[in-house]
Length: 118
Image (cartoon, rainbow, N blue to C red; front, top):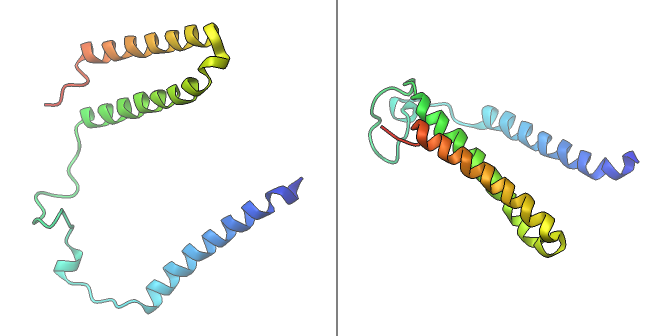
């Protein structure tokens, strides 16, 4: 049974080895001439504004988590739509319950003001 996983294990080993060899070769062969221009952060061709160590508002993380949550739940709609005919009425009711739960969560988040960006 382990023989079925040997190609995958081999690919993982090759990928790790390639990454390590590339890092080591780059550090040994590459030029090391740091300057203030090379060490400054790059922001779309503009001069950097502020510090890179600024704190983000909690709202940023809440919106990011909500996006991931609703995005992942929306991914479940695609396989359901492919199998809709085979699932029949049971699948329709289950997806209806799923959508209602999503909608209630969305309304809750909206009422709490988590989607308002200040």
